[in-house]
Length: 286
Image (tube, rainbow, N blue to C red; front, side, top):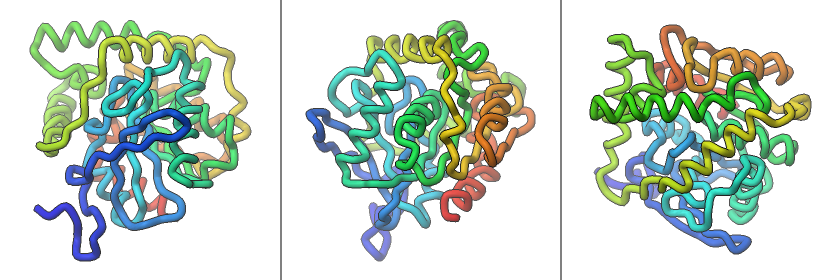
């Protein structure tokens, strides 16, 4: 398979080369694909996630018409530095990355912890983001977000006992449909065979969990500043970041759209990628 199409544009996420650059004294690893665009779509990844944790079916659907940039936070994967103690500081790092690339405006696609960081970014820089997608996530100070740590550790133990990937427990229901969706998702994540990213270290992982707990126990943000078009999505049985928090975001972000997928968990957008990918692509292309 060629890395690029006939126009020279990287055609698929699994073939997008990993790049690094340094700005503001910080080194970031990232991948980009899709046509040149003055306003790219920045992808904000989940807890413990790196560049290899994005579903290529969703990325490729969006990259057909938009420039997509996925990046590692500080202290994760191929990026330098250390993961900071708060998600607000992670948003500051993301801002440094965006401005270092020379962009004045971006669209954002986010999942789980990435959605929390994205909210911090928009609250701090309301005019930076034009369109916003928040999936499997919740607001600062939201009910039970601080319990993500306990849920994560519990499911990691369950996964270890069954020689499974923790995402099978954290992202999907444990019924037959959920198990099948989990295996299909994990297979898609393995399609990239070369130039794979470095797995997150234990120190960074623990720091992320503490940052999420601090985020959950902090005073709520003023989400009235989020006035840009916003799409919110989740499964109807999210045990990790409870589905009720997606509904809370929808109530608090005026004019937002909400999609709740039935019989699905935290990774509802991955279970229903065939339905969600075109919706997300159309939303970002509007």
